[in-house]
Image (cartoon, rainbow, N blue to C red; front, side, top):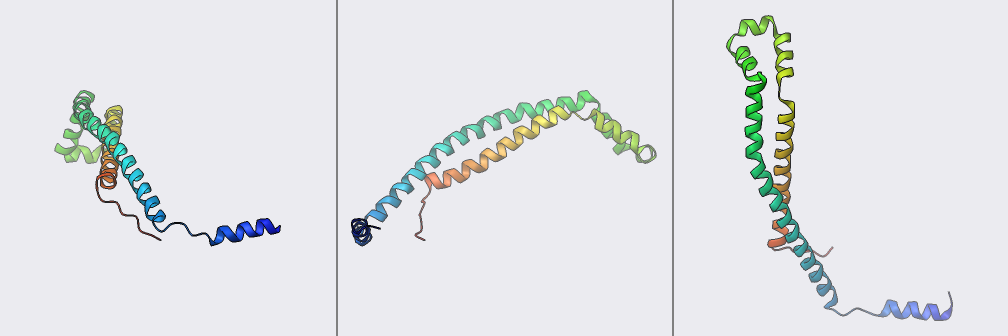
Amino acid sequence: MSTIEHQLHHTLCEVEPPAALYRKVFSYITLRQQRLARVHAFLLGMLTVFSGIVLVPALQYVAAEFYASGFYEFASLALSDHTLFLSAWRELTLSMLESLPSVALLLLFAVGTSLTWSLTRTIANARVGFGSLTLQRS
């Protein structure tokens, strides 16, 4: 290292930043985090509302598919006549699985998962964006 580089390094190591700089930097970071969290909370809130609205038709579709597919009849037969179910449980179970409206259930699962995920993320972002966020110095 040359003498000029050594002097520059020594001078820069001795320079202390202003006392309020640390507080100003972290307050700016906090404000940016809160602003970003508010935007995320708004967008995820819209997804939550949309998922909640879509949940009603999805439930109606699943109920209609259950009745149309014959699953309801198999289930009522299995629950009403225990002796028949015990004697032919394999056939009844396979028939119930075949008549299960899998596409409707998959759609309901997707909507429910979207609603749950977006609601939890909305709450978490709202706490950061609208609550008091304090950064602790490590």
